[in-house]
Amino acid sequence: MPAAAALSPTDAPREPVYQLSHVGKTYARNAVTALDDVNLTLRKGSFSSVIGSSGCGKSTLLKIMSGMISPTKGRVMLQDKPVMGPRRDIGMMFQQATLFPWRTTLENIVLPIEIRDGKKAAKAAEAQARALMELVGLKGFEDTYANELSGGMAQRASICRMLITEPAVLLLDEPFSALDELSRDFMNMELQRICTSRDATAFLVTHSIPEAVILSDVVYVMKPRPGRVAEVVEIDLPRPRTLDMMTTPKFGALVEHIRSSLDKEAFV
Amino acid sequence: MTLENITDTASEHEGDTVWSEGGGWLDLVPRWVQMLFVFVVFVALWDAVTRFGFVSPIILPSPLETLLDLIFVGKNIFTGGYMLGALWITLQEVFYGFLLALFIGVGLGVIVGETAFGERAIMPYLVAIDTMPKVAFAPLFVAWLGFDIDSKVALAAFIATFPIVVGTAAGLHAADTNSRYLFKTMGASRLQTLLKLKLPMALPQMFTGLKIASVGVMAGAITGEFLGGGKGLGELIRTAASQLNTPRVFSLILYLSIVGLMLFAFVSWVQRRFVFWHKERVHAGGE
Image (tube, rainbow over all chains, first blue to last red; front, top):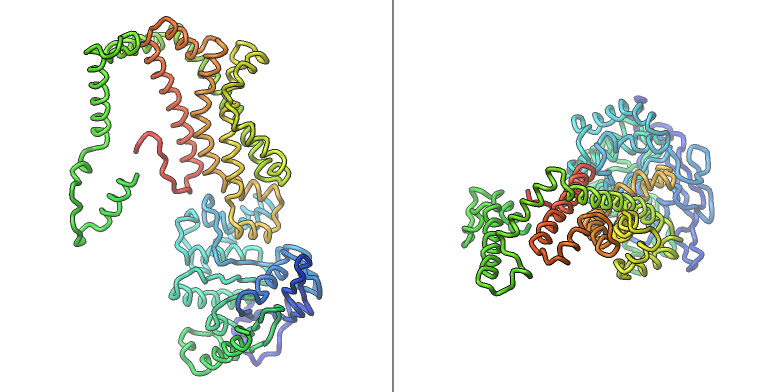
């Protein structure tokens, strides 16, 4: 992996990986505008989050970005190619680990390769999978069946499964919200470490303001009716982030700012 | 099951300060002793009823008579007598009937569970046929397929197919939204999603259907023989009953039930091997 790990905010902005311009989605059936004029740019190696109450279009946005549904307006460009469907350079992770219990951890991790390139390629990818398992701290659990892993370990395995195709962008749909708070904080720091070491471009959907702030370079605040990006908040806390930063006044101010921004319209 | 669960959790807290749950002496008696107790009481009552002439021996033979006949039938079977031939024929009917039901059942189940057309247009007919008394089709199968084992295989398969269809079709819906979503993002084809996600997820329910089918297939084969003749054990039972040889009827039923039990145990064994990841207490044969 490139050693661009210690990226400081003063560096020149890096090249965009994922760009959405004027993206909108209207559901024809009930004429509901789920998304209206969303613009966002994910730069190489950056971590962005989107936060908002339910109904603000977060999941529609994520579905468009993962190529599951098409927008009714605008351009969705990943690595300069329009997203027309599921792609191997898009990695996804969900709230549930969704590992398959009839497969070992290793077999679960190489599943995306098996689906896309067949059994032989999956076998060949095992060495890479073992390296990823070591990176996330799952070494020794290669042959453990998935239902014997704890919640945190299962999510580590699903991180490996997401990374095995070497995606250009990681889409994270509340990945640790099913974990208890202690594991969640810990896994967030692990996620940062993994993303940094892989120079990954990540996009996180979350309900938790502190989680968004501690992980992100940019936080997109979304609001409902119609779903839109209401504010873009740059998080200029130094990297690497630590859990201790969550007690600093600056962190508190950022959280407070986003909270009040969300509150303004939340109960209208 | 519940009793075992209670003792499981109790043993986890060994050394804790817990109040002893009163009346637990039965927990100390091994299960086989308890089962033996029920058996002995049953046989004793049976013996009493026949010994004191409450029931005519033609209607209900004594336990001893039945035991002697059991030994006689057993000897006949194990020395390769005519009853072994009958057993072999019934076994074939059960085997082919089960195999046929397995293929048709899984095939129809996949069509009904996987395609919208199957669910909308085929399933209603299957439900309608399933509600019919399937045994009533026996004379038809005899008319179509003759008095040989074919008609019995057909009836056995006919009865055993439906639980497999239902188990497969319902099981195919067991895959959760997240898993389906994940498969889509991986660019999986419909066939890949079926083979690598939906069918494995369906296995627990498919095996539930298979177990019900394994019981039904026996009933189908024997009913087929009752109504369509042939040379199987069912025919021997019918003959024995018409000669008022009730001990023989009883012992043949017992040997049949051993066959049925073996088939059920076999299905359960296969299930434990293939669905090792599904934590289900299999209700077969103890342990």
